[in-house]
Every structure is written in structure tokens, then in C-alpha cells.
Image 1 (cartoon, rainbow, N blue to C red):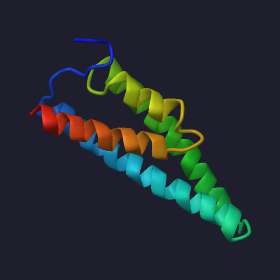
Image 2: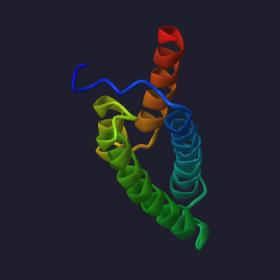
Image 3: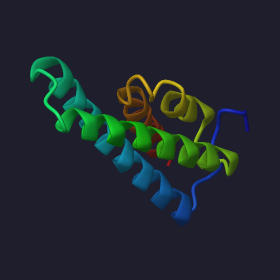
Length: 109
């Protein structure tokens, strides 16, 4: 097994993967709302503040959760880097990697 591979999936790890995938998709939707508010809607307050705060807190929580999942070999390193490093400037990277990993897991089973 290489460093970038996750361990074989148990029912609990599959459930955790699914939860993190959906939280990542939700995070991407919130970030899209923040971009729309900040650039297209003229920065309405408090909407921009709430969306920005939510994005920041979700990024921190997702980063910690994904790093913990990588340590248990539930998530591959590539996905964790996309969430933890690139997720602060664009959570779309993490969501894309979750979809990519899900397709890889389906193809392997």
C-alpha cells in the first residue's frame, strides 16, 4: 500500500467518507453563496459576514476531520491536501477530490 492509498473500507469508514463528502459539498455551496454576496450582490451585511464566518469555521472543522481520517487511513493524502490546503481559498477542490475518490472506490469494488 502506498502512502496515498486508503485502507480497505469498513462500514464505519464508508459512513464517515459519505458524511465528509456531503459536508464538503455543503461547504462548497456556502462558499459559492459567499462569492455571490461579495462580488455580485454588493456585499450585503450581515449575509456576507455570516457566510464568511461559516466558510472559515467549516474549513477548519473539515481540515481537522480529514487529517484525523487520513491518520486512520480512511482518506487518501491527496484528498486531505485538497481539503486542508486548498479548501481555504476554494472548497471546490476538496469536493472534486471527494467525487473523484468515490468513483475510484466504486471502480475498485
